[in-house]
Length: 278
Ligand SMILES: Nc1ncnc2c1ncn2[C@@H]1O[C@H](COP(=O)(O)OP(=O)(O)OP(=O)(O)O)[C@@H](O)[C@H]1O
Ligand SMILES: [Mg+2]
Image 1 (cartoon, rainbow, N blue to C red):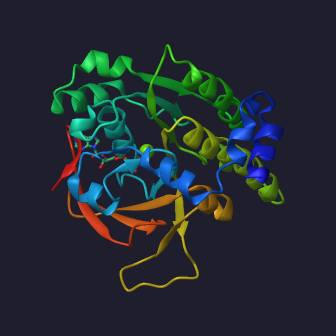
Image 2 (cartoon, protein in one colour; image 1 turned 60 degrees about the horizontal axis):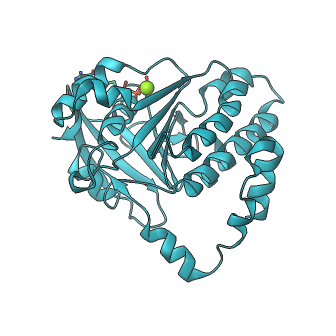
Image 3 (cartoon, protein in one colour; image 1 turned 120 degrees about the vertical axis):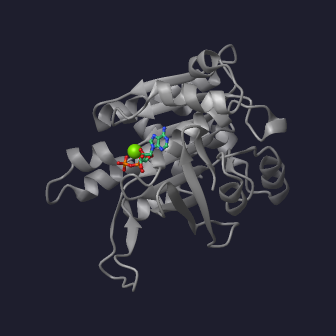
C-alpha cells in the first residue's frame, strides 16, 4: 500500500488527497466490510455473469483480452448501459466514463443496447462521459480530471470506468528496442492510479487489452494466446477474462485469472442489443 500510494503521488502529484485512507486497510474485518460494498453488474449474458461470480465487480480492475473481433468493445458498450440499470435488474445505478484511445466508441450502439434493456436511449447516452485521448501522456494525464469528476458529488454516482484500450498507445509510442522497461514503468504508474480510484470511489475499472501468441505454449487447437503487458498488467488486474471466437456470432469467455473464481468458460452471443446469452 505504501508503494502504491507513493507511485500515485509521484505520477499524479494532485492525487494525494486522503492518502492516509489507504494505509489502514490491513485488518481483515475492514477488508470484509469493503468487500460488502462491492457491486456486481451484469454483462448482458447470465452465462458470463455466472463465471464472473455475478458480473463485473466494483473496487477492482477487470481485464478483457482476446484477438480482434472477439467482442471486447461490444462487451464494453454493453456495460455502458447495464451499469446504469437499477440494482434490482443487476445494474449499478450509476454513470459511466469511457476512456477511448482508439476511436472505437459508437454512440449508436449505446442507443441500440439501451432499447433492448428498456432504457431511454438519449438519457443513457447522456450518462456516458467520453474521454478521447491520442497519446500515452494524454491517457495518463486524464486520470487526474477523471478522479476529480468521480469525487464531484453533484455529478455522480459513477459506477464504471472503461478503458479501450489500456495498452495500444503505449505499444505504439514505446516500440523501439530498449524502450520496454520505460514503457512498463509508465504503464505501472498508470495502472496504480487506476487501482487506486477503483477502490477509492467504489467503481468497476474495465480495461481492454491486446494479446499475442504464446511461443512457450502448445495446443492441438491452434496457437495459444496470452495477454500483453507482462507482470505489470497481470499484477494490476484482479480478474482477467480471455475472449475467443466461437461459431458465427457466438463467443467464448474464459476466466484466465481470478482470486475467487475457477477457470471456467461461458458461451455468449454478440447481438444488436449487445452481449447476450446464446
Ligand atoms: N449490431 C451488431 N449486431 C451483432 N453483431 C455485431 C454488431 N456490431 C458489431 N457486431 C460484431 O461484433 C464483432 C466485433 O466485436 P468488437 O468490436 O467488440 O471486437 P474487439 O474484440 O473489440 O476487436 P478489436 O481487437 O479489433 O478491437 C464483429 O464480429 C461484429 O460482427
Ligand atoms: Mg475493440
